[in-house]
Image (tube, rainbow, N blue to C red; front, side, top):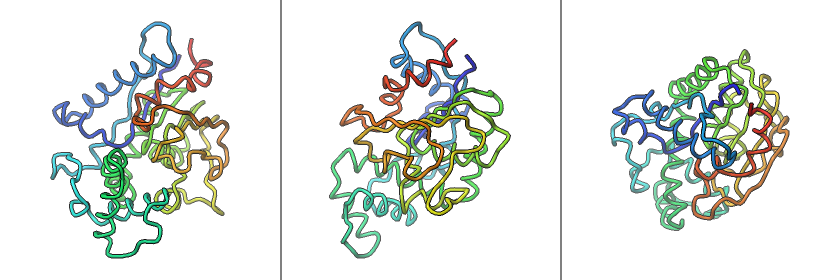
Length: 273
């Protein structure tokens, strides 16, 4: 089996710090964990499934807070507050509330339950950093493209925000060819947050499978508050299969739960030698 390339999602800056600010160290630490997680889904002997994880989180942080999650609405920069408000309205929270952005953001964080608020404080700043800073966006996309080009995998598994980076990287680099793209907990279709800002821009309200991808499978947990909507086929042409799963009402978005999900087995099995 040609190795699988993984692309991580939000909240992974700690790997970089724990590896002594080493990108390679962060990527390798994550690869070891992802191999262990995927082993749960595929069973059999313990083996290396992933050839490399495309690690880009360091490009979304400037280090001023040492990678710490903002504690309050006031600590979030305006683009992150805007992402938070738009994300919450996708969930039907605060649809009819108006007011100053900072006050509205603070109201939202107070209203959300603990797990949702913790997620939002990670999700909003990193999504905003990616979408509003062209330099950071290009660096993240280039990381993914370089890892795919170097490893020439048959399969790419992209989680969370990593699915957005991967989608754009594949479109920006049409020479990259993969047999299977699996997106896990993807926010690609999230309206008024990500979908309309994708590159290339959707045409007539629809995106499209990157030309170099032979097959696209999307898997989302029914309670995943990042995967809004969970079914991408309503917004993208070329999604070949979708599965709505029930992972864990607490760990609804973690790579561990997604990679250990039995739904991956039938899609990956043809690539196992």
